[in-house]
Image 1 (cartoon, rainbow, N blue to C red):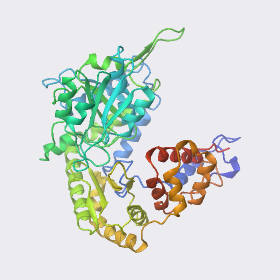
Image 2 (cartoon, rainbow, N blue to C red; image 1 turned 135 degrees about the vertical axis):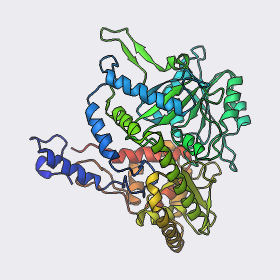
Image 3 (cartoon, helix red, strand yellow; image 1 turned 90 degrees about the horizontal axis):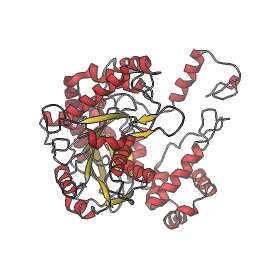
Image 4 (cartoon, rainbow, N blue to C red; image 1 turned 30 degrees about the vertical axis):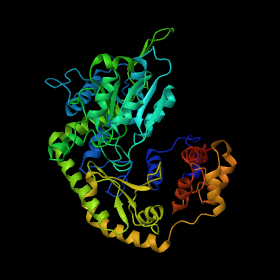
Length: 501
């Protein structure tokens, strides 16, 4: 894979010609999932708009070396950030003439950073609370748990009813206590694509005098357009009293390259605790609205170019195309005996599970992969069954007619193969292990037994690709409690992420 004449390292003794370097990158990229073509239902967002990639890449190159550390040094970046925040604010119910005319915001590097900063702003707004707490439904994105962990905020997780998969306002209200600094909900939740009852949750948060953040990272750029197309989208943004902040990712359904998100606050006073400033040292006074100090202007310029090129009318068309693709995929699921939708689609997600014990969803995921369809398996959780998640983009629309027959064929093959049969002692071990018992050596042995190669660094001559079938791995993870799953994956990814000497 790597040119051995250079020693297989990122820092060869002698520099390489530009085209040889690019050839290596192309070769490496050949092992990746396809980012275009409408067959990957997670991780990437493809509008299938001709020329958009080239425009975004050119804009990125124009500002790649611009540094967001000091907006006074690079006013071009400040202007583009302000424009992106304004566009997101208007789309989400803020701006002049709205119920939230003073909306302000910041451009971040992604949805997780936006959520961390929303939690930070809420925490730092209450310095008198020495043990702050964050209330979220169990369907909230895992990034809230990451924010709580990083910021030392206790996480109060409220179970969602299995029949609705939405946050329960009464249960959320009961979880709010004197140390709560933030209440959060989703529009929509990532796993199942349903919108929480934001108005009711914001009302109970406001009654308790607490902030309410709406995680619209996933759906904030599509739900307003789906509403304009006639979908019954409930209120979820700054039109809802009590909503104090909203996050929306531009690198999702605004179709900008990774990674650009926007965190919005209803007014400047709410945003103020988000900033970090420090002057008590002999260097420059640091002032940052985001976690990173130095930030490349490339992603921001690429997002700006993408929004300007597509325009409001373009996004409306893309939303209509995506809506139709969602409907077609949902129909394909309904047509297969033994499958059922986890929820009726109301955004850009199709999520399904099985009603047939003889149909192993993890085997089905493998069968779909072998047929060129890359889906995202979701493990069992708190009484909810394992499921298959499809993030649907506009690029999927031309492929919908192919998906139905492929799904039916994959289901037939999965039934013929039968469920994964892990050794009973391995299953017992997965259920009995504690996270502390999972040493690197034990996990390495488990990985080897499941056919997982390690050392997948750039220059690793012995790097083994992941096995063609992941069902045994997913079955093992599914048999383990969440804390053990976490530790297993930490140790396994640690095996993959080794230096390429």
